[in-house]
Image 1 (cartoon, rainbow, N blue to C red):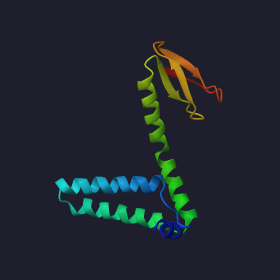
Image 2: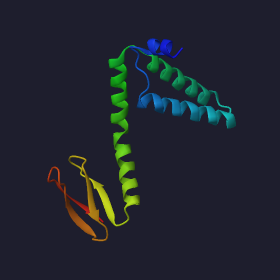
Image 3: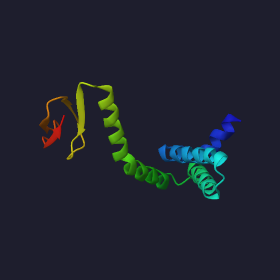
Image 4: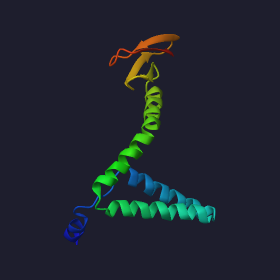
Length: 130
């Protein structure tokens, strides 16, 4: 049985970050419809599920890869911001910033007031409050 499934999936796209996100949306919408009977939320759940299934079994790997890259580029600023917040929470003696020019993460000691930070990667200078 496993060999037959592997043979079926040969040349198909499979699962990526966008598919995982669509499945999370699908599950969340199904859970919400347990408490709120809304046809719109149910439609969103089924639509995201069908899109994820279509993308998973698609043989057009180039197009699915391009869609995933657009998804990742769209959410990159949010993930970078969340990563900086997590780093700031884990290290109470330092403050972490992102260089506005090259997006390199820069660590600065806390409690120095306003400082001019020089990016080690691109040598860009920017002012931040620690």
